[in-house]
Image (cartoon, rainbow, N blue to C red; front, side, top):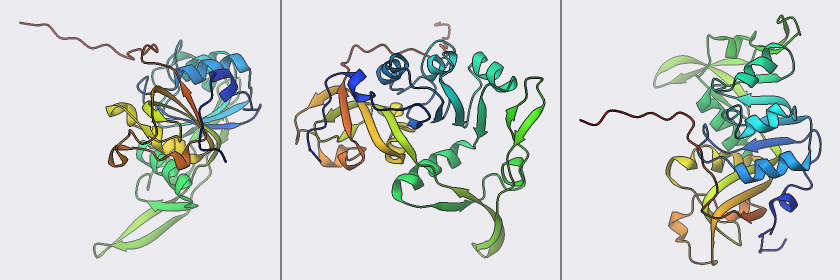
Length: 257
C-alpha cells in the first residue's frame, strides 16, 4: 500500500463506490460534513445506498441531496428532525430507518473501527430500543411494515448494584466519507473544533476511508500529539481548499443592546 494517499479529483476518489454500498459519513447537522465528496457521489450515480450518519442533512444540502435523488435505501441515524423529505420518504415506505441513540451510534462506529463485535450499554434499556417495535419501514399507507427486533438484555453488577444492559452490535461499512481541516499525504487528519464530532468514528468504521481536507500539509508538519485520526484509518485524501462552501443549519441571532 502506497503511503501517498492523495487523489487529485473527488470524482476519482468515489468512483469505485458501487450500488448497494454501505457508507459511514461524518458530520453533525451541517457541521463537518464532507460536502464535496457527497456532491461527487451524487454525480457518480451510486444507488441503493445504506448510510450511517448522525443525521441526513437538510432538504437541499448534505446527505439530503442524495436522499432527494432517491439514492439512499436505508439510514442509520440518531436524529432526523431537520429534513422534511426524509420524513416523507420514511412515512411512505420509500426509506428504511434504524433509529439509534446518539451515544450508542457513536460507540457502535468506534467499536467497529476497533475490531469489537458488540458491547453492552444501559442506554435504551426499558424502551423500544431494547424491547423492539421501533418502526423501521412503513407501507405506502403509513402502516408499519417492518419493526425492530428485541435485543438481548443481561444483568451485570456495577458499583455493587445489579443493572440491566442491552447488547448493541458494532457497525462497519464498505466506505467512509469525512471532512477535515488539515491532512497530510499519509492520511493523518486534524478536525476543526466541533467539526470533529462523528468524523473520526465514521472514518474508523469504513473499510475504505475517503477524506476531503481543506489544507494539505507536508508529512511531518503535524504535531503527532495534535493528530485526531492517524493515517492508518485513511485510504484516500482529496484537497478541497479553504473556500469550500459551509452552511449554517439553523441561524440564531440575538438583539444587541
